[in-house]
Image (cartoon, rainbow, N blue to C red; front, side, top):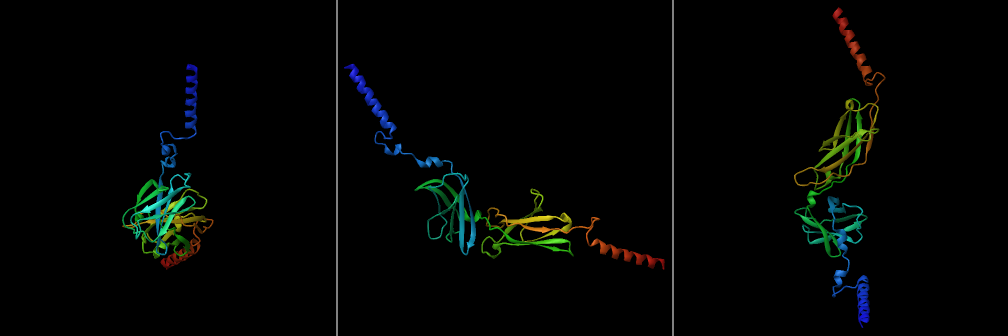
Length: 267
């Protein structure tokens, strides 16, 4: 009888173990047995920037995860608050970025941007659309050499000159000899025209130049734009004596004036 009781107890124990390994919840607690996908995203972080009047009256907001390798298949973004006529808006997804283009941003006050998995918020961040502006990149860089002034006039264009918002920008003009891959020279200015003196550049050298912009005003703040496409220009060569091509004619005039002065003194 004792042997039979022991055998039955062993069989009952094995049945319980197999039941547990098969994934059956005990005590009716089915939810505790299901895996929680949100635990995989416990360290989520993301960054956002806005661009105003990118398509007529429409503004855009773009967000991306700080970790580019995160599995974002089932994740979505939502913005709530400081919106015109609606409480929340959902983002569209394009590859590894999330964006929204709308004219419903009030540009006043803070909004809340959240990463969502289903209906659950995984990570949220407070943003002010007017304080995270990333301007559009400048374009159409032109470099004109003025022989009579011995300088180069650099001009470029920006779409923000024609906009209602974010008109004031600070520009970073970077230039270098094309053969120098790291030695960039930088000049900051608030207008779209710069003069580079020839004497401060290497003679007979090819230069690369590009521009980027950042909000520069009382209300709007944000980040540097992307760099503009680069432009290239070449500085004039000097003669074999290391002097400017203008030196020959100027020296001839000076010698003639000097000779005339000497003759007049002898008389």
